[in-house]
Length: 361
Image 1 (cartoon, rainbow, N blue to C red):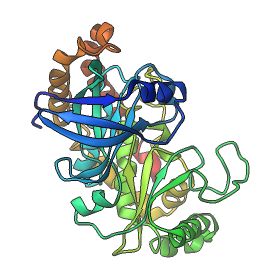
Image 2: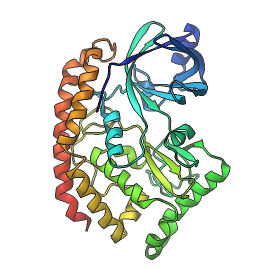
Image 3: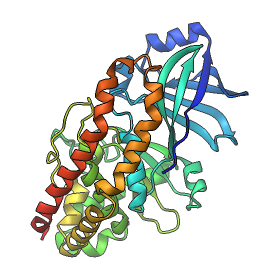
Image 4: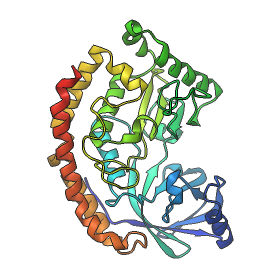
């Protein structure tokens, strides 16, 4: 994996407008701003992004060019602060890992941000999962939904056991129309209503099971606790008509949770959780397929020999910029310990998965 020096993105915002954004961190309305990279400047709109991350000192941003920016090959970009990840690399490391599994994942690269001439620090620039995401991969047009909260668990009930007001509560439609909402409602209803003896035959009419199992392997290995109930994008392939999972917000992985605290390597069971996963793995043939896939992954892609070079390269790339990041400059010692911590997690998690493979059958 080749890594380069970080580009500096200079953002200029009218101070009063920036102050209004800081006063109301929950506002979604874009405020006008200018982005300069090297000698090129672009008009854009900017606002904060994320949910609990908006409460942190270092905010994440969403920027919108209004139309397709040919230089960025995007209309919209996400700038993630990665504030709670002491390594800063877990999100990107996860996406690179998912790609090895044959899963779709956003493109990403690290940049250094300045706002009105003041350093804001290291950010991960993320590709938006939208219609351009599909075009860049030559994929058929189809609806895309972001799973934005814990209600997106493919169940009729919330995670607190209450009946949902809507089957598509928590889904933010990025691409599509009202008819696509109805299709999504039908999909979730079918997950919960297909009789057990018909599930194997019927579910393949709605979801690409092979790709879902690939995604499941990625989530289980990286141990993203939240990925079963949010932190994903859902795409219905326009050619096959089947739903596919796209990982999103994978900073709480590789042994740390959403607050950056230690998460033991055995915190997420090998079977995962959520209604769709449980029903798919209830089918013997799917469970065998998953077992074989997971065994292959821990012997090929989820190994220290495969992932350590990427970990060390990303750490090396960011290390010179850490002292310039006003929110991270005092965490250099912890930052330098993180590669070893992540590598040890991979060893422990892989051993845990290996020791529990036989429990699937």
